[in-house]
Length: 292
Ligand code: UTP
Image 1 (tube, helix red, strand yellow):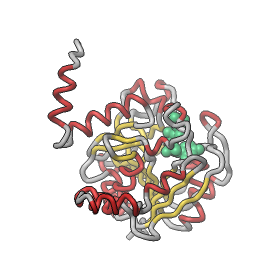
Image 2 (cartoon, rainbow, N blue to C red; image 1 turned 120 degrees about the vertical axis):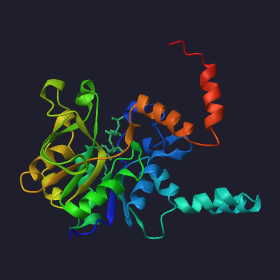
Image 3 (cartoon, rainbow, N blue to C red; image 1 turned 60 degrees about the vertical axis):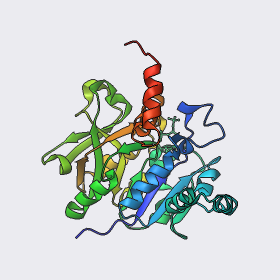
Image 4 (cartoon, rainbow, N blue to C red; image 1 turned 30 degrees about the vertical axis):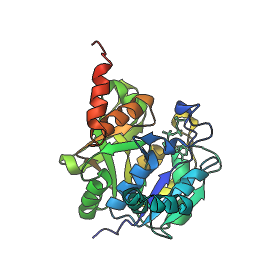
């Protein structure tokens, strides 16, 4: 039986340059899909998958993320006085328990691989989940839960993958597919942002991982890869020589909320799924008379 995954890492130290000026003083991870910040979706998904320890890798201007996962006594008191019991209960449900969160700092955004390495002391010598909060999923059960189910049978390293249009492979990490069925096939290789003609498949790594702690030693070499950043994919490519990597083509779909189109689409799709918003939003969208 594989060792239990109790810890999840959330890298939130990036600059979010694709969303400037919104992200000049505000973290990208606090942008909202409808009325929940991106980071809240990732934390909910981790808790649904049974994660007990939430590790955030933060940087400058990210203090508000820490505040978001704290109590706000004044607000809670006001909601109580005004009888807004439902809103109050929801706020309390969203909150991790005391002592469940840890925060560490990436002083310079040197890349995702470097951000993950910054969590090494908090994770220790245990397998851990990694969730990129700008990737938001519509999936039931949550994507990490689906991956955890596969992990409990297979162990090793597990990566969530989804099909992407061949023209878009150069924006993502792409895996090479080996033997096995969709929920749990063997990954034989991976490459970060390949040219479409060099891509080994159209299955992209959509921001959810279960990793073994041996990744930290490889990341400590701090070799720069694509875009001059320390890339997680490069370290995984070395780890795959000695450890198993399983691809989970999960049920559901991702919205890349680090890109404007993904973010805007997610807002429409999630709002259309909300009983309190769907009818009014549909009416407004119809009234736009988009032509084609
Ligand atoms: P992205 O590359 O999508 O985020 O990283 P970014 O660099 O902030 O955005 P752009 O490209 O400039 O618009 C995915 C996740 O990894 C974190 C980001 O905060 C984001 O949640 N990240 C990225 C770090 O924590 N540190 C880094 O050095 C890079």
